[in-house]
Structure formats: C-alpha cells, structure tokens
Amino acid sequence: MATFYHRLISAKDDLARAVMLVHPRANAPTALTVDASDSAVGVVLEQCFNGQWRPLAFFSRQLNPVECRYSAFDLLVEAGLKFHLDQFTTITHLLNQLQASHQEIHLIMALKSRLLIHQTEEAAVFDLNFAIDEIEHCNDKGQWNRMGIMFQNLLQNHNAHSEHHRIATCIAVALIKNTDNGSATPFCEFAKAVSNMNGMTKKWLGRIGTSVLVAYYKSEQWRKGRKVLDLLQEIQVNFTILKGLVSEWTASRCQIINIAGEIYLKTGYMNRALWLLRESNWVTSSAAWPSDNLDVLNRHNFLFSLADETLKNNMYSETLEVLQNLPGLQKINGTFDVTPYAGIFNNLLDQCIQTNCLGVSSDTVEFMRSMNIPVNLLPVRNLITALGRSNLWLKARNQYKKALSNGCYPPIEENLYRKLLPIPCFLSEVEMMLATEMFLVTNASNIQSPSVSKQSLQIVLRRYEDESLFPNGYDAAVDRLLAAVRISEPKLQIKHTTVNIANEEIFSLEHSSALRWLEQNMKWAGKVWLFGY
Image (cartoon, rainbow, N blue to C red; front, side):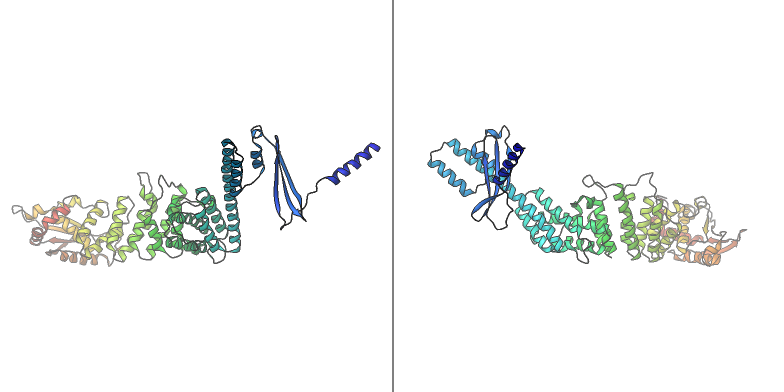
C-alpha cells in the first residue's frame, strides 16, 4: 500500500513539473524552435507570454538511414529551420572569415538553392489555395467582377498550364453553382471584368463559358445561355473548338454546336443558328472531335426543328440548305431508309411552288431525286406548269423529261411513232404543249419528208374514270388543249374531227403548221427531245 502511495505522489510531482501547453493568442509573437540529434529531429511551436516563451505544440520523428548521414545544419533545415536571403549572405560571409573549406561553403550554397526552391513551391501552393478560397468567397457574395480581376491576375502571375487549368476549373464549378441566380448571368459579369484579352485568356474564358453554356442548356435557361453566347462572340472566342472544364458539363464539338444552335433557335435567333452551322461546316464528327450516336441524333432533331422554323418564315433556300445537311443524307448508302424525309421535303416543295419560288423548287426536286427520296407527283407537275407559265421553258422541258422517265405521266412511247398522241385530260396547258413538242420531234422525218404521203397527225384527249378530281372536268381540258397549241411559236393549228367510242375528243394537227414549227425549232428541239431521252 505504501509503495502504491509513493508511486502516486511521484506521478503527481512529475505531472506538476511537466511542461504545460498553452492556448494560442492571436497577437502574441510566435516562433518555431528546432533541434536535431544523430537519430531524430524535434520541433516546438512557441509563443511569448509576459516575456516568457511557452509551448503550443511539440513534434518529433526518427531519421531514416540516409538522413542519419546529414550534417547538423542539414538536419536543422530538415526539421523546419527557415532562412532569408540576407541570412544566407551573412553565413557565407562568416564562413569566408573563418577560412572554411570550399566544400563547406559549397554545401551551404547548395542548401540555399534547395531551401529557396522549397519555399517558393510552398508559397505558390499557398497562393493558389488562397485564390481558390477567394473564388468561393466571391461567388458566395455575388462579386463576379472581382472574381474576373483575380482570374486575370492569377493568369499573369502563374505560368504553369496545370495551375491555369485548376483555377479555371474552380471558377467554372463556382459559376455553374449560380446558374439559378435570378436574372443575373454571373459568367458575363465575370468575363467583362477581364481586360487583358490575349490568346491564352480567351482560351480559358471560352472553356469556362462552354461549361456554363451546357449547364444553362440542361436547365433550359435559354436567355441566359444566349447572353453567354453573345459575350463569347463579342470577345471573339471560337467556343465550338474548345472543350469544357467540368466533366459533368463537357460535350463533343457536335453537341456544343447543337446546344448553341438550339439556344439561338429558342430565343428567336434563327440566322445566328444558321451562321453557327455554316461556320462549323455542318460537321458532326471528325478524328479530332469524335461524336457518338446520341450526338448525331440530337443534330438530326435540331436540324428538323430549324427547318420547320425557316419554313414557317418563308426562308425556302435556307430550309433546303438545312435539310441537305441532315446527318443521314450526308452519308447515305444503299440500305439507308430515306422515306422519313419525304414529308418535309415535299412540304417544302409545295410551299415553294405556291409562292412561285421556282429556283428553290427545282433544286429541291433535283436533290430529292439524287437521294432517291420519293417525290409527290402533283408538286412536280405544278412545278413544270409554273416554269412554263414563267417562260422558263428550258427548265420546264428538263423537268418534264425527268418526270416522264420517273413515271409521273402515263407512258406514251408506244404511240409516238404512230402519228397518234394521247393526252390525259388532267394535264395543264404547259404539259400538253410539252407532250405535243415531243410528238412533233419524234415524227419529224415523216412530217418533213416530201415523198411520204401527208397523213394526218391526231391528238386524242383521254378521259379518266374520276374526272371530278380535275378542275371543271373534261370540257376545261378541251380549252387547255386549244390554249396549248397557241403557246407554241409559231402557233400550231388543230381542228376537231370526231369522237371515238370512249366519248373522247379527237383532233387533227394541221400538217403545214407542224412543218413550219419543225423548220424553226428542230435544231434545238432535236437535242432536247431526242438526245438523252
């Protein structure tokens, strides 16, 4: 019992004599005291209270075998001893006075270089960490212009790409957090505060802006997204070739263009959306900028939406341009199903013809044929009629020949050389005139030969079962036929001869008028109707 009592008293005395740690005080002088032995180093953090240095914390560790071979000076530095440049100058001056060896002086100078590099790295890390904390603070307080000024200063004072990337990523994350910040657009206020717009600054602003743009798109904040786009254009940043910084908000180039274009479209800037697509050459994928199937599908849907809007605004040429660049039509192959595209192309064709926009109409038909997209028969016939009525006869004849070969009209080849021309009653006067021209050219040798008896050339106006589908019925078709022969130059002469068993009107074409027409027109008509037909 006595032994236990004596041990308790001894422990109590030891505790009383032990050094007591004190709590730190904000304004008290602070020092880091270091010491080293052959096997360990120790550090004590102290503050001066009432003229006495009191410990705040202790630290120590054992040295590894390599460190055990360090000099005492090296061990002190390893423990945490710090020097300023003027202190190193004093040390080397004293060593020279003491006539120390070159080896000892060289050791101090090498230590100086190592210590200063270490201190510089620590200062740089401290500066970056401080800057990142300050960025968060600015973002929380809504001080985005101050954030922009800080960003510019950091770019100027830190040259490493990794540091730039870390700073820019931190800013992008902070700005994305504020995408729901009322009517404000934090990125715009941030970017406007950056005054030194060199190439490097623009690149990082573009990457930050792209990340924020994708965030606005995903939250359907179209107007804020457009403000970001307007600012990027104002500072002349080609954001479509810059990748975002935050993994969750990154996208392929195809998708970035889709996003920017849709934002323009949602905010009523169709022309900007078109400009963006043209500037990017309508690209969807490349070796440097690969895209996946979802990106291509999104481009397809975006272009359909854009085509609908341009069509509503009577922008027919632009609509055709958009449709021609649909992803599926750029890389068409024999197995590709083009049927889904027929509706919007034929709708464009109808509206172009109704508004007499014949150039785009012709281009639309030609493109549809080149891609094997089904063309509705009625718009093609309306196009041919409109071209003829506008005195664009060369184009009208070209379209008629192609329509005939594509089955838009009943086949007439078997009757061309039999001096009998069957004309369907539903044709317009232009179509009837073109059919008559072909009939005359194919029978030219008989008409122009003096040795051949002057047999009459006949025109039969064919009836069809459901004549209610045609305007004013069969009687109006007779009027259109009479108008058709008057269109020709020189005019043709026909006269009614009889009615056949099907109650169809039969007309004879006067030989002399046919001969005059061939004499004046055979040179060009032969090339049009005989060659390539």
